[in-house]
Amino acid sequence: MNYVFISGPIRPNVDRVIEVIKNKRMQFEDSKIFFSTWKNNSDNLEIRNLVDYFIEEDEPTDEFIFNSIDSRTYQQTQHGSLEHWTLSFYKMFYGIKNIFSFIEKNNLKIPEKVIRTRSDLIISFDKNYLSEILNNSDSYFVYDRLNSGANFCDLFGISNFENMKKVWFYDDFKHLNDDLRCVWNIEELIKQRTHKNNLKISYFDKSKINDFYIFKNDFLQILE
Image 1 (spheres, rainbow, N blue to C red):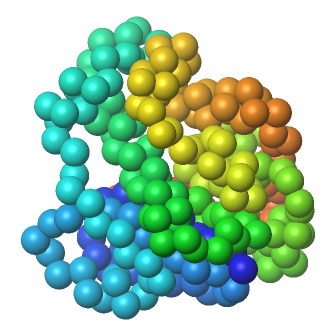
Image 2 (image 1 turned 180 degrees about the vertical axis):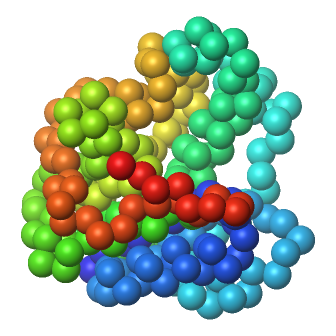
């Protein structure tokens, strides 16, 4: 059995999130799907009914996040107008932390693999190739957008539970503060955490990926 971790806001809308969930359900058949998002006034019953575990938390306020995270990446410092990225960084890791905490709190079974993805991301693999990935014992699989490893993609990943936790789980957000000030962007942060934990990185074979895009409000952002 595997776990699919979907985290993020309902973006760009409920219908698109439903497509993302169905995309993952179709590909990862022997999986439990977790969806971690923020409490709001919308009716999310249809989403709840499509996933195995629906986790809602109060969305951290901007004030709280800026009081908690005083570090900035090199990219933010260089450009000087990317303060809003700090909000996204915190919420991303916080949402994933909520899934790990939920699993521990409810004494859920540790899965063979974890598939981590955004709430607006569609990705489709060749079926035989996907089986090869899921049968790999210890690699952390990610997408390399430059075929070189220089642009380590943080949008989607597959690995075993322990590896995924080593990379994505921040129990102490002071640690996130320390990490942010030493990297160019989040992609570099994730890559550094894989190296620090001596994890084997494997890049997806792009020729075996049929679809890879993000839903935006009025267009599809094709990823390469």
